[in-house]
Amino acid sequence: MKIAAFITALLCLVLAGASSATAQISATGEGNFRSAQWGQSPEDVRILEKVPPFYKDKNLLIFHDKFQDIPTEVIYFFLENRLIMGFTHLLANHDDLNNYFIDYEKLKAALGQDLGTPDMENWQLFLPDLENDRSLWAEALGFGLIKVETGWMMGDTGIALRLSGANFKGHLTTIHFSLADMNAGRLAYRDYYAEEIGVPNEYFRDSPKSDVNF
Image 1 (cartoon, rainbow, N blue to C red):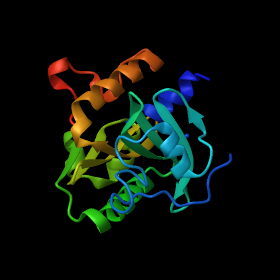
Image 2 (tube, rainbow, N blue to C red):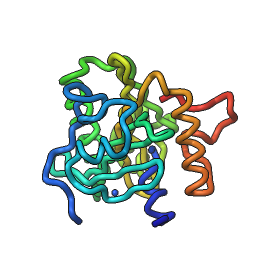
Image 3 (cartoon, rainbow, N blue to C red):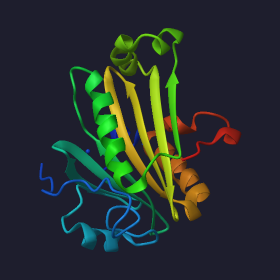
Image 4 (spheres, rainbow, N blue to C red):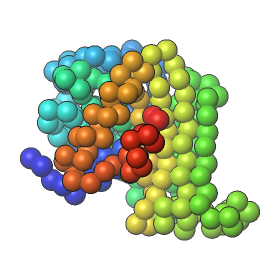
């Protein structure tokens, strides 16, 4: 089952039978990502999730979940049958795009409960007027003119929270990744995305010297 539009929407930033659990945004607790440990197999993860995946292939397992009543996709990414990355993608659909900034603050607070103050928070405002006029932010987000990335490091895990926008919608994703597999993981994700979608991922559009830092 390969549905290009489905995978495109899912993998950009970074999907009813959803489970009744609340998405584990926390980076601490039982595992490196949710209850799973880096290096575990797809079968190990399926046992831990306790429900069938919504989608699966050789590199991905995807489960439905919720975060504070917002539908959520939980995505496990494997390299050579080993878990190396995990994504939590919020499927919020707000008419008022200001609500994506509210969701971002909620996610940052949920992560901060365990991780404390972020190690970095980078706001990219691609028009000079945005720095002085907050009322423009909602529309700017919908045009992809605002991007936010917040990051933490904890043990052998890196965590990134990303807010971006396109096509008059916002996109919120958390990314957990194994620091030991960071370089191999980002290249594997880039290659997987290009193979499935046929175009580079938005975080890999520069030259090889400018590969994204998770």
